[in-house]
Amino acid sequence: MEKAHLHQIHPVLPVQNVLAALFFYVNKLGFEIAFADDPKNPTYAGVRRDDIEIHLQWHDAKEWESGVDRPMLRIVTQNIESLFNEYKSKDVFHESTAVKETPWQTKEFAFYDLYKNGLTFYKDVN
Image 1 (cartoon, helix red, strand yellow):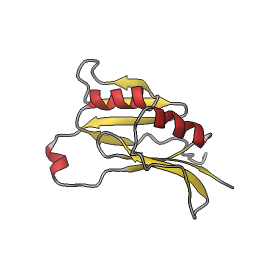
Image 2 (tube, one colour):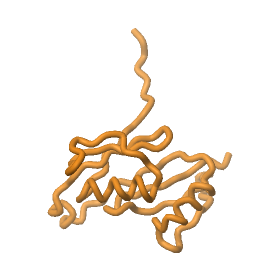
Image 3 (tube, helix red, strand yellow):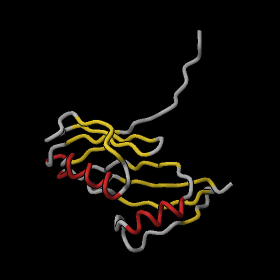
């Protein structure tokens, strides 16, 4: 029997408005729409850039009232400085956001999307 092999992950991020999230990921972060369950009022959609795909799922505003922590994604990236400059020009993060080298041997930067889902882009420095 052939051994199973895991080769991709498509995280699902909670959002309050899928259209607004699609706009952010496409126009600010350079993703393209992979699919949407409804072209006019989607409640579930996916965006893709290069080799990654992120799914966006509508959640009722009441879920945000509970103060639940949102996911933090770590995305392996080539040419980290180039991506940082691209996003900086799109005004997607706080002015103090910077590319930093970490004690765990990565170079990375992080910020939140419209719905406080964390996005960390990084590369190994080895």
